[in-house]
Image (cartoon, rainbow, N blue to C red; front, side, top):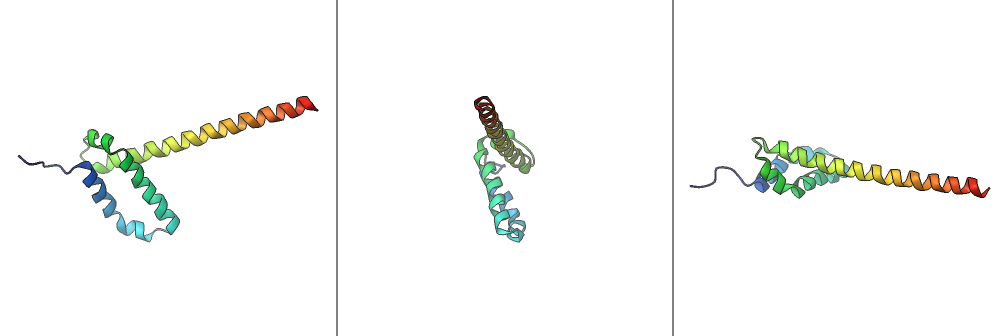
Length: 97
């Protein structure tokens, strides 16, 4: 008996292709962001496959959200580190005065 469900990778490319008109209407810099979002989804193909969602776009969006959250968390971590280093320098300046 043959498969009745497309492999998720094919579903992902099909979904991305369905957004082609939207992508084409975006400004160049936004097209790059759009492409990065689908690249994030491709990064999580294995997890999307295991999700078994009836609507594959649900898993695609979750993958994108995970990568966006990862990016936000990393930026927050870097900001906290910079704030800590700045506070240390300010304290050292006060102590040295």
